[in-house]
Every structure is written in C-alpha cells, then in structure tokens.
Length: 265
Image (tube, rainbow, N blue to C red; front, top):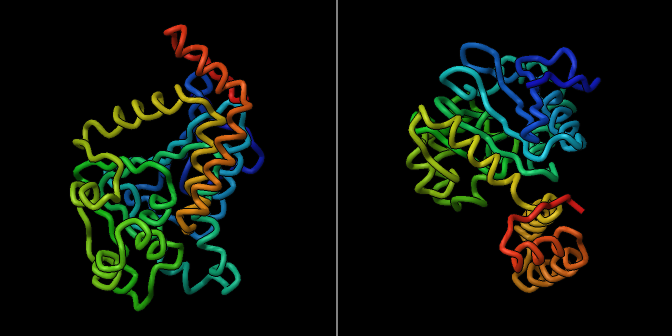
C-alpha cells in the first residue's frame, strides 16, 4: 500500500489517500479521531482527492472508509459560522465528487454516519454498512437544513415521506433499516465490513472498465429523464460500446468458455 504523491494530495486535513496498484484500488481514509469530524478545508481536499484518483491509471475502484468505530459525526459545526457565503455555496459541489467520478466508488459505513458524512456517502455508488451504522441528517437541531445535497439525494432514493421523516425529525436510521429502505447496498456484521468491501472491489475489477464507466454515467444522467429519453440514451451508449475492444473480448471469451481479459478500450 503506497501513499500517493500527487501534488493536490499533500498535507491532507483529517484524512489520507492510499493506493494499492496491484489491486487497482485507492482508499480515501477518514482519520481524525475519535469522530472523524470533517472540516471546511477538508471538503475541498476530498473533492481534489476524488478528482486525482479518477485520473490515476493505476486505479480501477475507489473506496471511501474511516478509521475507528464511527465513519463521521459530520462537519465541524463552528466552521459554518466562520465560512464565507461563497465558500458555503460550494459545499454541495465538493461533496458530490464521488458521483462525478467516472470510476465506481464504494463507501464503507459503520457507527455514526451523520451530516456531511451521510451526504458524501449518498454521493457514492455503493454503500456497504455494518449493523452498527446509524445514518442521520441532524441539521434541524441546529436550526438549519442539510446543505451538501443530503435531502435531495435522499428523496431520490427513499421518497418524500421517508425523507421528511429523516430530515424534519433529525431521525437516526440503523444500518439494517437503511438496507431495508434501499439506502444501503449491503448490510453486514461489523466484523465483516472490510471483507465485504474487499469482495466488492474485486468483483467490480473483473468487469470492463469502459462498460463500468458507461453504465455509471448513463444511470446518473438519466435519473431525472423520462423513460423514452432514458431508453434512447441507453441505446446510444450500447451502440458505442458495440465498437469497443472489451465487448469483442467479452463475446469471444464467452464462446471460448474462458474468463475475459478486459483492457478498458
């Protein structure tokens, strides 16, 4: 496991970046004991980290995780009063960085996953939660609302009724319930969180990189589209992939009854 030397990833505030080139994996690791509070400067650094890893040819899959028993208790509260209105207006853009990544992003959540910790998790593609995980958007207790895309993303996933229940009551949602509501991809025992994450990384690495990127962008771009437009865009994406080396390799491997060797072209 190697620390990255990218110039945008020096002197990181409250987290670190690790790259395992042999496994084509990069980890963004929240590491500010004991609650992994996310500072204002850290939000912009997290955006830059995702952007740098998205451009790194050694990396196929990005994992967001945290040290300790809690993913994150949320943002540094006093920082909201100290930040300029211009800075605050960029919060949602920074925290949406995982969704903008062309590569698949997995987040592993355990313990408190509150506020911006929950919001950045909602921007990831796959949320693996342990049974200790508690999701919450507690901003109402501060006389505020979520400001980094939390209520908007949440409503897309679970609907307005459950979103009002979570946002307007600052209600905590346990990991098992989050899975039942479709918020989490998988819910596992706390001791199994890392192994479940590892397993998903290796599963995703086995697919064609170009097909993965295409699927993610298509799904993100058509989330608000009508059915007819979504089908039309899907057809265009399918047609482009039809010309790819990976699709030819996939077909040939299927008929030869052998594992495909995808190259991402």
